[in-house]
Image 1 (tube, rainbow, N blue to C red):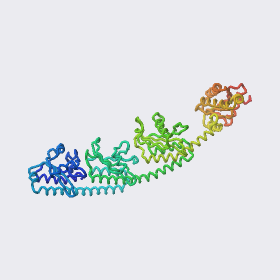
Image 2: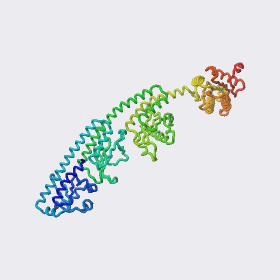
Image 3: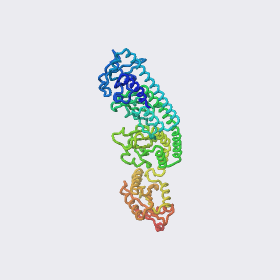
Image 4: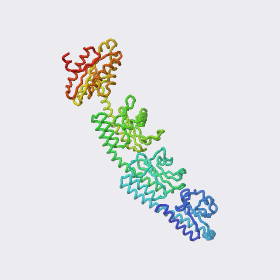
Length: 602
């Protein structure tokens, strides 16, 4: 039986006795609770339409006598329009209550009898005694329920069970009220119980006040057509949310109700905190294992792509984002990496990258956004964002972003874990970047940015083993010494750079271009037909005079090979050099294709 039913059953018995004895058609009690008169009869419309009447508003009518006619404003209430009088009942310790009646002949006789005053005192004490008895019974009932619920809380660490029992206990005691659990964002999302996320930007001031102060607050929410009670869900370490109870408009929560809800919210807060700490300890062990595994793998001399793919796998497994990216910063330019999802290659995805980039230009702090919609003026596809910078020695090398469509998807614990993962990975990633840069310096010629001779040798050697055909073009600038002597070595360097750029443009990604040494350059293209080789060599030789300033020509030696007759690694260079020598000796500004007759000519 709920609290309101208990109150009603006892006072209904007293009302029936009064009605029968005095031949009354109607009678109602109003009991004082704090500064208001309230009805214990929950079945009547009056109890729902006008739950509380300020005591001072009615007490002023009893300055001269204990019985007066019903005031006009009470007559306007449908449930009370047939009543004629109200009687002030003053019990012990100045406790006051009201009896509202429809006068009868027998009642009139009683009012003028010598027993009227004594009977009123007796009735007042009975009403007060019944009210105290009800409160005692309700308190016992409340504590029994709290004890049973607390006992259950200590026997489980299941968040679902805890939430379900809190809601059940409230609804059992207040079946006509609506109850909502408003929990802060750092709580676990994995629950089947409907809860609301606490949001400072949208919560009512009374709810925020309860959350911040840790005290119960009440509000007559006229815009919501209800009366609200906000009880902080408080543990030993923090406040985890609000237990919000919605009652009919103008309903006044009694002191006993407030105390019961306060204790219930406190028991819930402690149970939630214990469960949270329990799960947090398990999660910390799991997180430490994850960080340790990640750090171990990232320090195994993996290349950059392997590192990022492994890190991508860890982030997807731990946080279940819908989109993910890794961005590196090169001269204040964002470079998207391959392990990023395709969304970040779209205009919408680039907006997220730009937002994070602008943030990290001003601050080294990580980004944790629960609802991105609140920060931008348009609807966005992904509302939850975590963006963590990769920092080594106070310098940001890049950042990682994870996104989810739903607002408040990532918990604060997830945010802290991602910070740890990225920060532990940053040094390994920065070292890998430095190794890549160092390797690039080793593999490339500093002046022309073409590949170095050592890289070319390795590339050609692998191609001779694995490919079906190939071409090698060895190029020498004609009369290059004259350019250096006439214009200076700086101009000579510019000519080399111009030719290198041409080779890049002509060859593209089909093969590689390298600086052979001095004024000699080279081109190697695998898996190419003979006709294509000849056209490519001709294009290179004919284009160089057009792009160089001062104009220079080149002589070149070309060798082509097929899998049926694979040449030796050293042989291919010797043969190309022989063809180049023939070009030089026969007029320059041309290329020569190697064949065995050239050996005889030399």
